[in-house]
Length: 234
Image (spheres, one colour):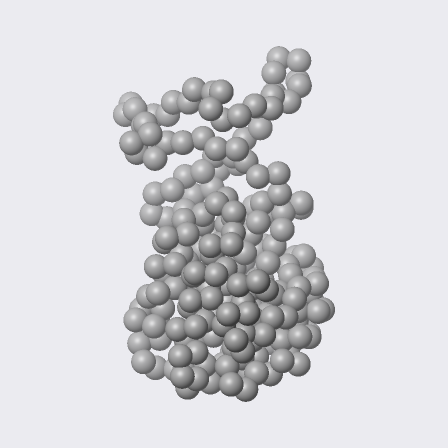
């Protein structure tokens, strides 16, 4: 299976069998690998590497709320970004595939900030640039359900194996002011694609009912972030 991530990452996932059609199971360092682009030899200096594949791949998209309700909470955006980059990202295995999207205005669709990838540094940097590159000081109502539905649908655009784990981690205060999608649509789409929603409630006034409902109906979990220090163990 070949996966290409812009601008230049190509991953080849494969299984190996011998002449008797028996599975070959061994550590990557027991193999020698070589590659060419045309006639040009590609080596480790260019990023050529082989690693053990995960028996069950983790696919996770973070959906971040930059709407006015979150922007007006003193330190709320900074805490949300800290939780996403320093707590969640650092808790994941190296081969976890992570994407990020954000929503901040009631007259715009959510934005895919970075697609599924394994580069934690690039993912963290992308989150750090959301305010500058996407929000740009213009924010309004929240389209939380629309953003969730778009994120769930992206799981249908990638080669997700039936055994893979699929999660959305929503960082929000739970308020939705402007979505065209309903909560029931989001839940139905998540169940159909076997996507679990983990909802992390931020802000001074959290609509915990909406977040609890999303989490429980999709087999996820609701976590309150009223105290940032409680997030790490959660």
